[in-house]
Image (cartoon, rainbow, N blue to C red):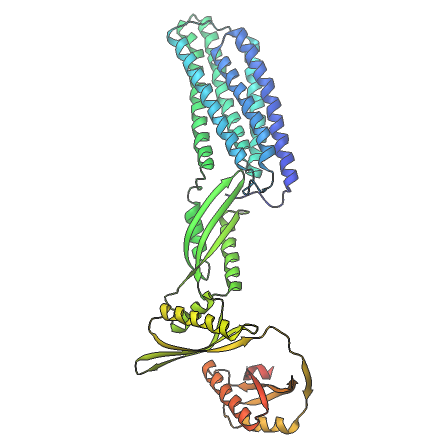
Amino acid sequence: MSGTPALYSPNAMRAEKRAVAGNSVAAALVITIGKIAVGVTTGSLGILSEAAHSALDLIAALLTYLSVGVSDKPADAEHQYGHGKVENFSAFVETGLLLLTCAWVIYEAIVRLFFRKVEVEPSIWAFAVMLVSMAVDFWRSRALGRIATKYESQALEADALHFSTDIWSAGVVVLGLVLILLGRTYHLEWLRLADPIAALFVGGVIVSVSWRLARRTVDALLDAAPVGVRSQIITAVDRVDGVLEVGRVRIRRAGNRYFADLAVGFARTVTFQRSEQLVAAVTAAVHNILPDADVTVQPLPRAQRSENIFDRIRAVATRHNLNVHDISVQDLAGRIHVEQHVELHEDLSLKSAHDQVTKLEADMREEVPEIDDILTHIESEPATIETGDELIRDAHLERKLKSLAAEFPEIIDMHEVIIKKVRGRLYVSCHCTFSDDLSLASVHDIQTDLEIRFKQAAPELFRVLIHPEPSTDNRR
């Protein structure tokens, strides 16, 4: 179930496929001419049926030669999936030709068995042509089969299958000629029927080959999925971490290339970047089943069973392509109140921003009907780089801030205090060390309290940023 290996260049692949197909055409031409000549001179229906078979093989080989030259052309505006179906169509036409051959051979064999006696004259040339034909068929079936397997070419594979069965059918014809000679030598009249019986056997071989080819080519032309591959892909993709469900899985083949189209459910709260990573993981899982397949993955947002009210609120915001933070949910006397901060582009007018938030809140109430009230704090999302005036060294302010931090027993250490002036406003940032096992919620509460204390003690501060660090990080 592999695609064309990447280590073969397209030009080399085309050249090798056309070369082996061209050799097959030349061999088919020589064999067909030889069988027709011998069949006419001997009157052997077996040889004539083989000549007809070979003539159609010649047409099929020509079709194959032409199809492999077209099928490997890259996709274009009119053929987005490439030209690989040309090979499948070539194999389909070849199947029709085989069935026509089969009908003629069986008809003529029945006539010779029951209605018309035809004398067959075996000759050394008849045996020579048939034996040479078997040798050539063996050579070209091996050559075609090797290249068909190497490049997954259905047209070349059809030709290889043809010629491998031709060896056996030609052998049956030779056996029929031998039996006719034995019948004449030992005066066994009934052995004259060996030739039309051999022809019937050739017809049976053609039916068998045609049936196998017909099923495969029709399946390819109707985009039938390879047996069992869909279930393998579903199983493999379902094991990818982050995949919630595997919906649509469609597989089609064009020439030697597979195309897989999947719809896969991801958590609706994942970011766009995370979604891209999950798509890559799903594609890799498909490639484990169908290497080099062209894979298209459609992500489907899905709600997880474990979602809480915070997840559902964020999911609605994500659907609006908005960022919400500092979500606070309170249960007051059985009524659910939500407070949240949302970032909107700084260039928006208040009216536009308010309209967006009103729509967001309405969708949140619809998605989470247990919410009774929502209050949204609108923040401007920075879109410009602020130019700082200077870094300030204020030892007195730094000591004051450190003394305030020391009042919190959870804060082990405060360091890297930076004071900046940006557009005439004071900005302070610092690092605070906490115990490793302190919960993030507790750390956030302490940071908020500390920020309030800083601004109370130093009202000139415009913004405070506190970076928490685990204690083990500072011991490195």
